[in-house]
Image (cartoon, rainbow, N blue to C red; front, side, top):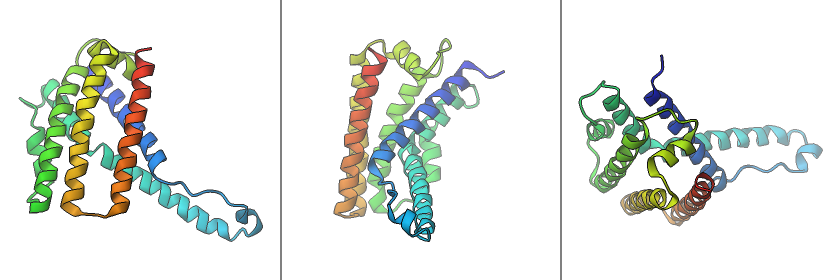
Length: 200
């Protein structure tokens, strides 16, 4: 029989992937259908390739956006299910990122801070009575919009620190900085919509 912790874990993971996909759809430009596809059907092959690239890019975006969440969730779930004595997200995260170069050390430090916050969040969400859906879990744990907004503000601050550390460490250029800004803008907007819907 599946425990409530496992049910809640799936519920949270599904929500987080869906959130990442919603952000990704606003950040990554989807190829548009052109009238030329009707007039010159050979262009459909090119369009199909571009759609395939878009789908792969969206999947990679989502995987990247929830990367730290997976480590936090795995460690907390293992702890709560009795598989591990304590939440060892730090060990597993550093094992997955062996011997980082000097430019990546600050990025990893920021990511570990984000994982610590997420671990505390999951430790509150996973146990407890069954919840019908993700909003019910959030209402049960946070109780009101102000408390949940406070958590989201703290998370957003850590996400921005990770983003700044990545830009400083790898200096990917203006386009990457613009994409980073879009990610944070859309994340903030979607989270505010979510808070309003959950606590309305």
